[in-house]
Length: 483
Image (tube, one colour):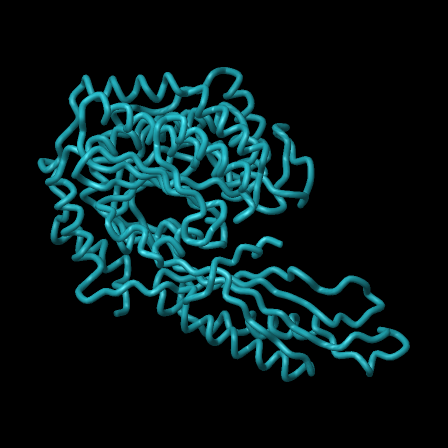
């Protein structure tokens, strides 16, 4: 079945009224204090994990040290940890079970981005280089783990029934790590999943992300001396450039809001050698997964034409594929209330000074005081990017939040974000996320009516007869996609 568009769902939510605040069973002040105090007591361990993972800066499916660190903290806290789930060596599942009850999952990410190496200097030090945490996943993984540790302590102290899980999910940045877990059925018995993401503001809004399919086009030609015998060669780079030119012409004739991005990841090694091999890495995005599938097929046909026209041969390897996000308003209200209970962020004079230096490098400069505010929670809206959390949201009710871990005005995937994610600016956002996630998770364990409302909304948004079908097909995890 073709998934319903997010705009249609947003309108339906407004008309039907999916959530009723009266359904929520708020935590007692005592429970809130108990959970918050545990997060605060464990804050040094959270900070240590976040900063160590920042230093590791490991790319997707290469997060050996990052994954091991988080697994170790969970084992030490009494979780049963299973590494290597879904045939992903750096993935893991941590579980604490106390009898029959809800199964609630907290997601943790920890991969870095290529080409973003940067120290803590608020001035860009290199263009390119190795990896850096420009999306703040060092904070993401650490805060999620310590939110779960706090919930486990509360469950044990109060004999709360149910199962708490932490899914360690590698390679979110293009590797679709969670998709393989969903495809393997690892979320089939989960009642609710929770996540968060570093950002520029504090918000529990649930919005629209873009479905995304990515892959690599590899062209094979014939090497020759570029000056002495060019007629003997067939340039694989010509094939890549012809493909790129045709795709750029295609942009006028594809559905609105479709995005196509590419990078030439191998264009030959020397100008005086006709390249026998070249590679282009492509992303196709749209909120509708079916449009993504259709446009990708057109790109594949363009690649065939490029190979035919340049006398080369082309192969395509699908690397990743994710759905658009399925929001949940019933869960949003719970997350928003707990975010407001914790409150916004206060920076020290030193943090304000660092943020001000970073903001000098930005094109837009919002008020730094905005990090102390909680934005209104709304359902719908355009979040722009893509995430493999979306696939989770189509098989279990899912809710997330963002916190101000970056300097207001910063762009995603930027060196400025790498700096913030490695300082107390990022850590304070992670503390807020850990507390909010922990409170929300705990509340859901004792709110069967909220879970029931979230599931009813989830089924209505998915539509009848929905069957999950991974956009990346049946391929094995692309463990070497960052090589």
